[in-house]
Figure 1 (cartoon, rainbow, N blue to C red):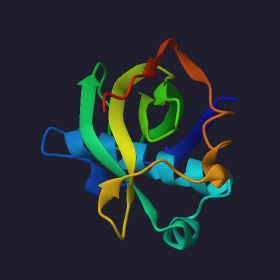
Figure 2: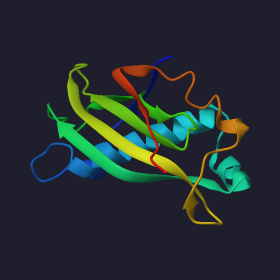
Figure 3: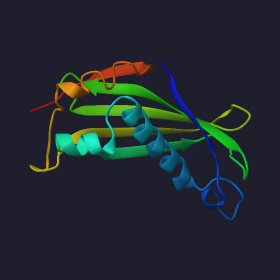
Length: 147
């Protein structure tokens, strides 16, 4: 299933060059992740009940086309990599301008952290289906954990 969200951009998203500021792309990508988790049964409250939270190790953004003031944007979410125990994951966002041209791509590498132990942790069974309905990138790979 393709997961996409369309946003109306706001004044605060833009810089002095009259195009979207670089960190705004990452903010929209993060918003899409939160919406995806919530739509798949894992709201912020659910994470708290599980004593689990998402953390990022790396966030990389590549820019291709400008987004101008007043443009609507569409942001998608796909699964780039996943460990067997679901502890670690890589997600990819593509951000399209109003003309449906790829404006940027955001790749994030993250994991789940146990909020009490402050250590990486594999999630409970509730998380099994969290990524199963998400489209995978063409270069999807399994993350091999080295312990």
